[in-house]
Length: 607
Ligand code: AGP
Picture 1: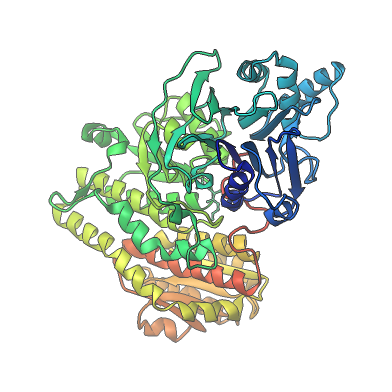
Picture 2 (picture 1 turned 180 degrees about the horizontal axis):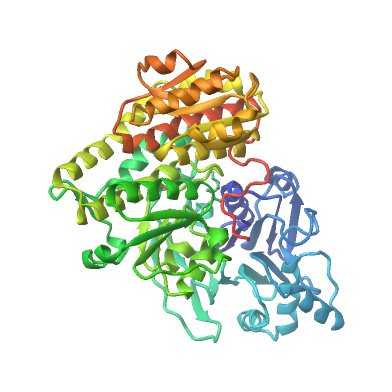
């Protein structure tokens, strides 16, 4: 997902733009660039590779007062300096940065070429610059509006024109764009991370809105140029939340934040007196919740794994049929929307295209879809029919950790609500709350035994393949552990239901392929022990995540990671923490870019 920053005001804009791009690095990118006004005209500096490559060629002394910046994630056109943003028109007076995909750019490019326009890049974005040029008659906003009427596709974009040195025009359709309001200065950005150190006063643009900003104010219109009133929001997080602080990587910081982020996700949502929960954003009355006969959860990646856990818990405790589906699959399956089925879209970023488009398809067919998101004002959060913010705090590392356990927290509270509306007793509800609210302290206990995990990670990370095995609620956790390891250490890993190992995967067992078993002391404990014995008897190396002093496990496993005892329902929280650390330390040992791993972006806003 590309990163966008725009600034107009009294500060030296090159400095604001570069600082903003630093805070957008986490989204993943392959080139970056800025365009800054100057008395001699636009200064455009752009470069492939990491931001340090751009910083090495930008003038030391900050300059300019109006400017735009971009981190590019290549979609149309290779990773080259010429394809990096910003892009300009033929005159060089119009400069643009853009996030999204223009579907009819080839047709437009051909038509513009026929009119004599010459192109310097292979990108769809440059076509927008020339389109604006062809529509420009002195008013930049009008030219942008006219150009947008010819575009098909998605965009979050910011445009500047040399003849309007203190104006920026921003527009949004399908890719996020927010406006930051300063004192005598204004910002435009693809997310709050880029501007939080300057202002917490923001306005979230909606699809189909165009904003014209100057240092002293802004005007927002729709695509028909009708004025649109906008509310000012306040970003709930301090700038520190977007910084690594004392940690070497965001991922480590975010793993350690989980005892607090899970607690934050429960604050104000647990009702001890009635032994139930409260999720105001559901926009559903108890009567409506009682009518729900099925729950379907759609998501991608880690969020899908959270959905799998949630579906099992709903079925187990609330006695409601529930299942989770990969968003990109359900979208194209022409799903049947059954009456009294409640859908959830789980998405940390709230911008994942697969999940967003699947949600829209379900809504088009009449489904009610609730969003479980982390980023306030994100597209899924805004377009869903209600939902819950997980309040995990900004998750910057590409590998999702605290968002996963915060998604679980929200869905556990939803399950409690649904269960207590149905057959769950007051006593069982109270016990569930007692166990759930004890999770943060138990996670803190795991934090005190991390060195052992580091040793195990170093011992096994030079393998080509890793198996993760769990059962019941911990089967999705095994899948999540495999995803964590593969996405940041690049070791191939697969998560299985432990019983499944004998239906094929056991052929993979050898002394080089470690098998990590999740072994809670629940009713499936002994069955997992026998699955472990099957691996052991074939010479496989075994790592076990098990409760303290489990002698049966210690007698079989080559290495054990201990976690505190808990109710069987709470192990997905406790089991996932060691797996996050294991992935982190393996990646570290292998010298990987832990926060921005190979080929990955924090939010995948393309299909
Ligand atoms: C998980 O570590 C990955 N970053 C990825 O699988 C992620 O969970 C997935 O892309 C979904 O993102 P979302 O939660 O923002 O929708």
